[in-house]
Amino acid sequence: MSMAESDKEEVRSMLLHSGAVAVGFAVAENVNERVMSHYMDWVEGGKHADMDYLRRHIPLKRNPDSVLPGVATVISMAFSYAPRAFRSPELPQIACYAYGYDYHDVIRKRLTTIVEQLKEKLGGDWRICIDSAPLAERYWALKSGIGIRGLNGSVIVAGSGGYVFLAEILSTIVFPPDNPSHGECKKCGACQEACPQNALYIDGCVDSRRCLNYLTIEHRGEWQGEYALYMKTKAACQTLYGCDICLRVCPHNVGITPTNIPEFEPRSAIMTLRTEEIAQLSQEQFSALFKGSPIKRAKLAGIMRNALNIISSSVSSEGRESL
Image (cartoon, rainbow, N blue to C red):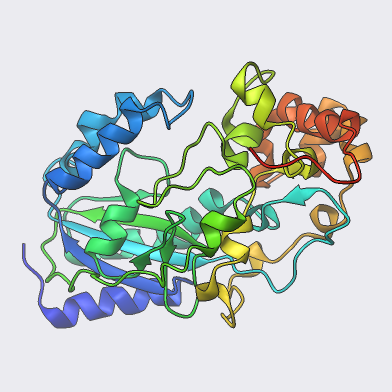
């Protein structure tokens, strides 16, 4: 079934009303072969670190039909989490996307009612995807025209910068597509120069093996070999959960509007959290403190490992030089 332009704009309006700062439509088809080849080179080069599911998902990423059979349209959305304030620099680093509640739960809750209404009105099959399916999310964001790509790999949305969560709705309904994005960031190189781990490449790729987001969140167990080495840099010894240094220095993030979603507003317990508190948590206390928080993804063992790394690392007055 094909929808008219007016139907598309009604859907867009509903999704913007849900809290999205940008909504775009794209024809569901094979991902550009050049993009897939670039992604495969990234995996083959080991830059996905130990996240083996990224290798397993390569065949599935080629076409969203693997996620929703018969899909005709990819609706890509961006939700801002831009903070009004950051944690004190005297406290250990916590990526600001984790200041509020878990975006998976928050965005899914906001979209579920809308999708149910659309199913009833328009028919067809629909699926909500929030970093939970083998989709090339940034590719579809650019294909649907909601932003441009930054050198740090983020999608930059006008007015909200790179502080955005991406989400998609797949539908078997045919909607007229929007124009894809062809613009690029300022390419000033500020993000690459500021990255304390030298994890950013000129082509916009991130080497997960060096990235503090991977090392403090996704990596399980103790750090061994090169990972142990990377976690002894000055920045790593000040990091409790994730990193967004590359976003903080980006000129596209200057003067942007803070998030319009209350659930993403900073939680006081997160904003004042100290390393010593983490090191003394029981499993019960961890579950209570981080209930509904994305920080729970690191699990107690991971967050305690990070805290002990901060406590046990003695940084000289000059500081450790970045690798």
